[in-house]
Amino acid sequence: MRKVLIVDDEKLIRKGIRTILERNVADLDEIKEASNGKEALDLLFSEKFDILIIDIRLPQIDGISVLKKIQNLTHKPKIIVISGYDEFSYAKECMQYGARGYILKPVDKKELIEIVEKLKNELQEEENNLRLLSLQKIMRAKMFEAEINNIIFSEIDIDRFRERLKDMAIPVDEKIMAVYLLLPGDNSEQNDFSAEEDKLKLSKILPEGSYVSTIYNQRKDILIFTKMHFCYEDVKKSYESLTERKVYMGICDLQENFENVKLLYERAYKAALYCFILNKDIEFWSQISWREKEEFSQSDRIEKLKELILAGKQKEAIIFLESIFDHHFFNKYSADSILALSEKLYTQIVDWFCHHVPKKVLDIHEYQVLASIFNFTTISDYVNHFKKFVVEATEMISSLKGILNVKDEIDKAIKFINQNYHRDINMAMVANHVSLNYYYFSTIFKEKTGLSFLDYLNKVRIEKAKELLVNTDLKVWEIAEKVGYKNPKHFARIFKDITGLTPNEYRDAQKRLRE
Image (tube, rainbow, N blue to C red; front, top):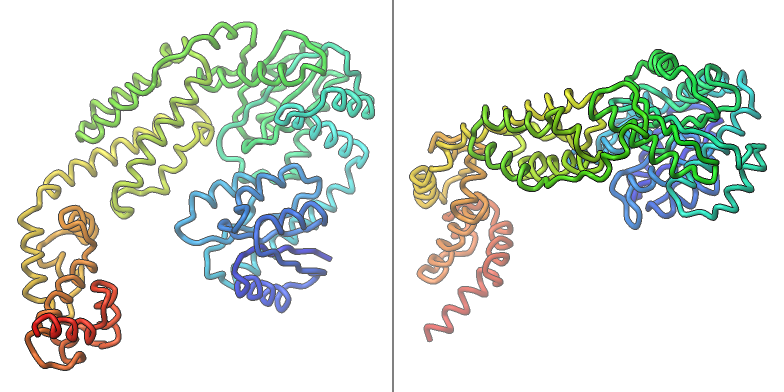
């Protein structure tokens, strides 16, 4: 029997999902609801749920934050995200935090049933497999993993940490090294069970007395603690074979005891990060520690690349991008400064473009993956995808050059509106009249007039209506028809929105002014 939690701030949506599940999905023992992120977290931390169906946009605590906070749950539910079209980037992030399904609103009944049935089957399969594993071993590993992540990412008391390790029979004063396995790229195919199974297999090929922990980040990297050196290349290749993912191995070969886990982690992670940046398989902290002091200015490079793209200089922009990611250049500087560079390239160039051009002109979703360099298996893959963005962005800029100087076309459009406001006209009709692309016309019309097409059309119609109200005795409904509104109530609402008065109030006020 399964337990489900539905989280959405709209009661009708929660009830609709509940009804679909109750009528169409068997073996659901209990279905509970929460209307906001805080209620959801309270339930998730106090009860065990098998399936979580959650909206991204929630009051108090949003859906993404909920998913982040439940990463450490011993019994983490299978997650289905429900969302609107405009929230795709958030849904993408949710997938990285373990979401197994993404359903657009309004929720499709068939799709929901199929995903829930699939997750039920996965749960059953995982439970069957887990029975074959040593429960004691798994629990011990999970406890160790939780403690390691707590000491790395949280401010916890070191004495408490020592006591917890002693409870797990781990020698806290023993000198150890750290080995970090960085796993960039797409990990959406790997479920929680397969990750645990791979980790157990990894433990078997490590020296006795080694400890393995998953790092609670989006990539689910692996951190190994060991008392002695081993054949790093063999272990790396074995784990790549198990996971079918590229592995970058960083080694902190300076021994410390378990009290200094955070320091061991930071050094091993930095060594692995340099492997990724420099496209190496294995790196030792002792060989790269000097680089941590080398920083470089990023703003000038980012601004120059942006200027080249905006100028439509495709070839120059690509050459300059390649110079930014030159192997010899990266060989000098700290990993943090290089990561910061990639993040700023996204926020100041890619994201900027995605928010300043029509969605139909530039494929926004395709380039959101550039938000993190770790979405790619290699730096080369990242740079190639960025080049693709540069090509499309510069071509878009070039195609717009002739259109950006369209004063005559906009003047022609305004003249057409002024002559035909009384007819049933729309933006598509006017854009076609001046021979401009619909989306280009929409953007440029607003740039030139300061108003959207519809706001401008309403403004013209209401100005004409004001003249008729003052200079004729026509009834309000007759005036509405003469200025292009078929529905008098709609006309009255638009009139009041613009003038602050109803048509009759405006007519009376003008009469009083003339008296």
